[in-house]
Image (cartoon, rainbow, N blue to C red; front, side):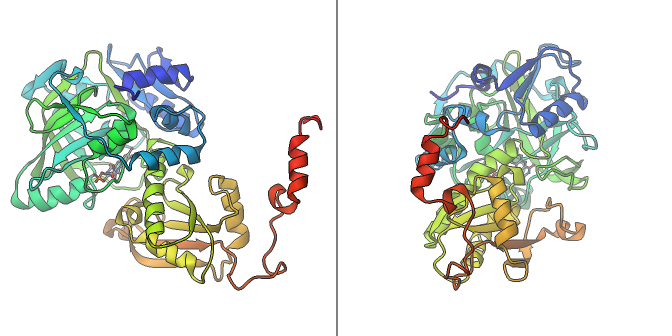
Length: 476
Ligand SMILES: Cc1cc2nc3c(=O)[nH]c(=O)nc-3n(C[C@H](O)[C@H](O)[C@H](O)COP(=O)(O)O)c2cc1C
């Protein structure tokens, strides 16, 4: 059974000891953010702040999916499911989208406020990092919008900073689904774009907003991953539907003709990169929320946080499918969350010259991947790509710096890539690299192809079996 809401998920995390309820008073002004950040960097639990300064009765939940353990729980898998099995479950489930069901009555509409009654500062919105441009209410949420020319309803996750009681400003990348539809079909004709923002839905429903599924209804993908339909309810004042069991719903519009200063913000790369700049405005006309609402936050920064885990799941499936489509004898693909989505590792059988370069070209031809990812590391089948130490060992020992590092300048890139020159970042200009860690195909003799000196490669199978069988008997 999928989690109906975030509250059920939090109770499940209590059973696996993956959440801590903090009853001591915690300040929304840096303190909650600092705790959440330290937990991310120390692989700690999620946290439910039950006593936020100035906000009695309103709670703040952080770190929903910033560990593989919590991702496993969210998917309904055993908490210690190995990462490759979590990824396999993801890939299998997304092949079978499940349509949402519409309900008439929903917890997210227990309280309704409109127009001048709306005050977003009534929630314990955190000031997350030192130097942030403001208090960020939208860091783990879904923004719902509709394509005016079809039935397509998009869910996306785009950060949002409080500007005034009813206005937020956000960073929406122009090539994201919302960015393309807003600029191409609303702003161009000076029309406001109706939106609804759902905060605090169950974790799998929420993560589909932050996942590049392409121009499809993410509600169906949430159903696929939950193995159950999501319950949606119609908004009170816009013609859109939102997850019925979310905690807080903001109904409003993106204004076509006005921008507000937003940022900077501590970002997913582990750095604060983007400048304060004029960005899109989300005007909120109606606010609905559950009794005793729980606001959610993701403190992006040095891995591992929700962004890293969500994208690690999403990128792998997209890349693997595309490589297979091109006939690459790929074994495994992994976007290690520790590398902040900026690197994809591929293990493959090597049959022909130039394979690593070909793999790099295919990976970087996928816009949603090229936007965020700068590096591809290609290794042979013997490397366990889920073991980052092994990947780095391979990179340091098999990649000839003179011949095997292929750079691709003048590539598209997110403006948030830290190593790019600021002028290039503003233009969205990047550089991609392929690290070819495969042995040259012409190396065929034992002497040319160095043999790996590891337990499972350097001993005959019968010795390995004997040692493993007797391990305890040796006294280890
Ligand atoms: C935690 C998190 C925060 C994100 N913040 C932003 C953001 O502020 N702006 C943005 O353009 N994309 C952001 N993304 C990436 C988008 O959500 C992602 O590209 C998603 O696919 C967008 O939806 P779309 O594919 O429907 O455009 C974020 C992703 C996650 C997981």
